[in-house]
Amino acid sequence: MLCVDNYFTGRRKNIAHLLDNPAFEALRHDVTLPLFVEVDAIFNFACPASPIHYQRDPVATTKANVHGVINMLGLAKRLKCPILQASTSEIYGDPIVHPQPESYWGNVNPIGPRACYDEGKRCAETLFFDYHRQFSVPIKVMRIFNTYGPRMHPNDGRVVSNFIVQALGGEAITLYGDGLQTRSFCYVDDLIEATMRFMVTPVEETGPINVGNPVEFTIISLAAEILRLTKSKSKLVFEPLPQDDPMQRKPDISKANAVLDWVPDIQLDEGLRKTIAYFEMLLQDSPTMFS
Ligand code: UDP
Image (cartoon, rainbow, N blue to C red; front, side, top):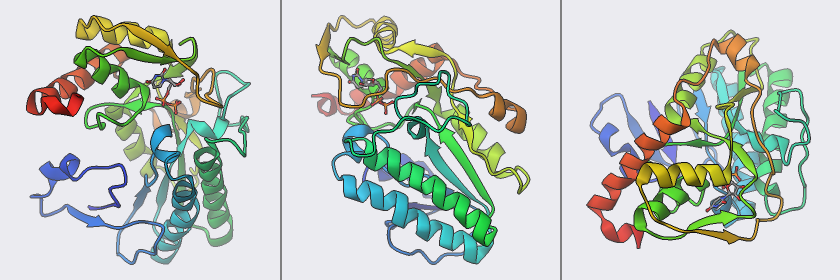
């Protein structure tokens, strides 16, 4: 197993427990530069995924999704090996069709602050299907809906980690907009299970396949659940809704169910408990991390 990361948002301590394993190797590399290695399969997850991170250097975000994807597809083409793309529910933008099936083409603002990610990932899908049609590269395109779990960075900026860190630190919970926008949250272990199942499907199974937990929550109800589980007395504060923030999101996962024989196992309550336990451990180890 070769793990390639430029550590733009990832952390070496997240893989520290694997470094002693002789079957595991870590390589610091940015996929926007060519990579010459020998492998049997490629999982391309390279790209910052949190809005604050991917908007910090939007050109680098587009490069990861275009130059990086061309490099990884070129590697798969040379090695004649399967390649899985971590695509995204952001393909659907601010969706008018609800829930979102894979057949929906989406509603994306091509010039807004989220476009580097949304259009970058859309272009990545185009490249995947063109390499498949033109060069017969075996592709697997997986559209991931909001995923969370242990080992997220305390400053990741996405909603689940923000609310947990704020609740545990006794700080105000920052709700953007009125909190009535919705998301459907998938626990990381469920996502990994679907990813591994997809990689070993027959070559004809290219996707795209939605992977996520179809149980939909408003953001304000997520805040209430985290306050309940952490027994926190943090107050809610309302801040402006970021531009182009999607109002609703919920995957139609009937294709994942049919093709991968998969449904998520871990519901929000259990997943949040595990994630809260992780952040409590971080807080004990390093209380200043939260200040
Ligand atoms: N959000 C929020 N407070 C936060 C962080 C996020 O209210 O501190 C909202 C955000 O506006 C969005 C939702 O939570 O409507 C999910 O945001 P996130 O950044 O986690 O993911 P994405 O918008 O990419 O789905």
